Length: 195
Image 1 (cartoon, rainbow, N blue to C red):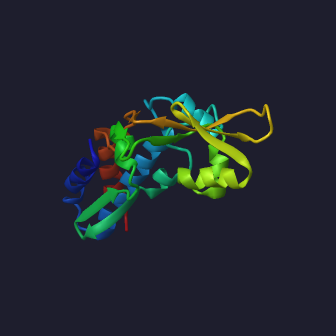
Image 2: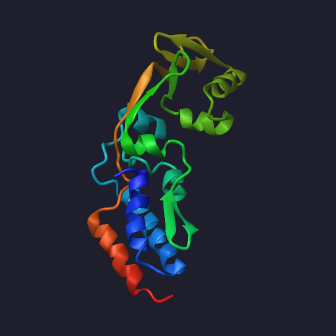
Image 3: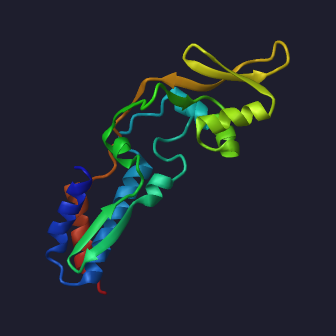
């Protein structure tokens, strides 16, 4: 089921309801269930090692880093008979459906270990981070398919700032769906609700 399928399935339920309050309630319950799918992550492919290193969290769960995606799923009453459930987060579809992200220019910059700290300090754009590292006195250089940084003292250890990739594959981690059981649950709970 894709994003439009959820709205189509909800429309079947809300068509039987005459009260706009109950229509809105059906949307809220559907959004809650979809957020629960994200939180529970049943069947999600585990995080890759690069993501674990970037987060600094070996036990992290997919799609739950900041909660931004989960918290963005909302229900909106379109009219007295229709409710829409969705998100405005740009990356929601590729996270839900999976796919390949290809570099628009020459390379994708995939953050290395410990880069989250510097992204929070200097901004999310690689150029801002690399300029920030330079301003702190680090040497920043490219070797092969990675960008490194290190202190200027002789013999200091180099750290990967970014891995350079032409493309990356995002695994499918479907969360935006409602099962028949969940649809029936919504229908029953909304029908029983006194507003």
